[in-house]
Image (cartoon, rainbow, N blue to C red; front, side, top):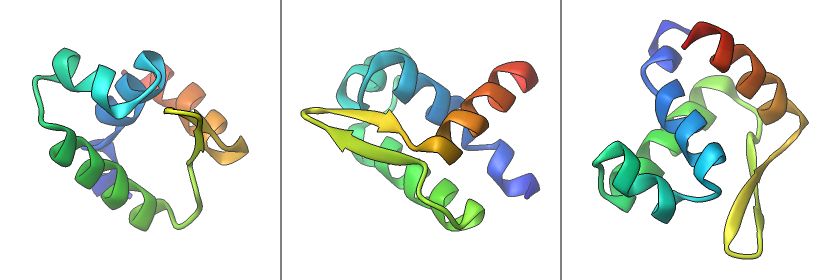
Length: 74
């Protein structure tokens, strides 16, 4: 689970920005790098964290819980 900590800032930024594209400028990462981070976090956690909503992303119930915990940690 320690590995997951590395990806939490990306996860939070994507949700706060509403999508990967919007978060890329904030994080100074490419969209591909952000997508990779989200995929790695999903594999570590083992449950879906995000769902597509139009052009943006929304958290699943598990994603909402992780978002709340991440804000406390960060």
